[in-house]
Length: 429
Ligand code: BGC
Image 1 (cartoon, rainbow, N blue to C red):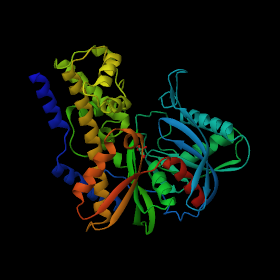
Image 2: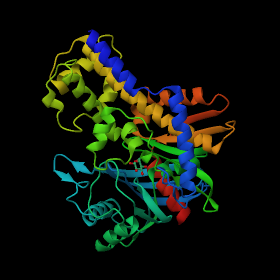
Image 3: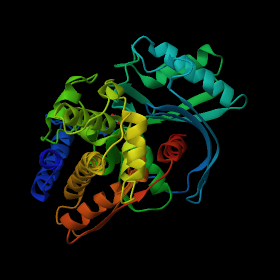
Image 4: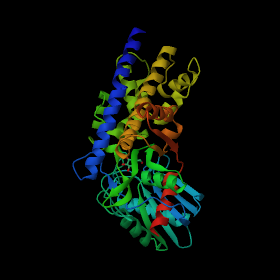
């Protein structure tokens, strides 16, 4: 009993972020934004999108391709021109399909093969007619215009070969041409954070930034003066270094596809939280604090972030769902004290994620409104923000506590990457 309490106290020390630390992270973030904009060395790439705030009057029906790393999604989206948008039809395919063994994110797959699969899916989804296509491609891209984006590097552990350094719109256009699909014309390529901003701004909210707290983590905001004009900037904030990491973060980073990169994302996003949780449980097992069949979770990434959500949602006094999950996943009957330890470990990892995401949001607000007197709304999309128990409340409570004179709130924007790509396509048409 004492050992368990001690082990949890140690985890608490490792994963908590004090109010002072959070303030410091926000200040460093604001500084990194400034440096990135000035072209000085910075962990924030501050990538221009060449797209300004929409008016809400953009109209038309657009085809949307949403490629974010988990699924391939196609949508047809109608912009009504009165700040309303409708998704008329959509279909999605997993990029990794355990049943068929197909994995379009593997290093053995080439960029041409990936984009050929995408073009085939587009041909099936839109079998006839001329279409303007908006493409949400949720990776760091050096953008040369609203329709030309070169992938700087993959994130979220994707390894598809021969795409880094290439122009994404050319890869897509060539693949469409090879399948005689020239009736489909890509007109805009954006990041999902830009899409989230555009979808919320189209709907009329006075939005200052768009964020994703999902499989990946990132933010975009409206910069009044980028290259002499107002435009949305994709910060690629997942690459920010929050400067504090545990031994678990170090191990995860070391074994990741890109050690040293995406340090904030590795502490915040859904792609990684389950793996951090697995590393923590394994260490508690090695320390004899938890007994279970360690082989059950010996494979990296074998615990998902969704499982953590299920554990946290268990409000029963004897943690019945946690008990059931422990039986299913760890093949063990647990004592209440062990279940409490497991749930607390999940809670510490998730709370740190939400507080770090909030620190980055604070950083943006400090840069945009130094006296901190305005009213600000940040649009957020992503499974963590939408579904993880307590996540949104933790972010909101940080904003309230750290911004005493400002009213800042977040709002959920569902389907930002789908509707936002249609808005971008309309702006660019
Ligand atoms: C990518 C970003 C993206 C974010 C959310 C990150 O891994 O680098 O471009 O916005 O994930 O999808």
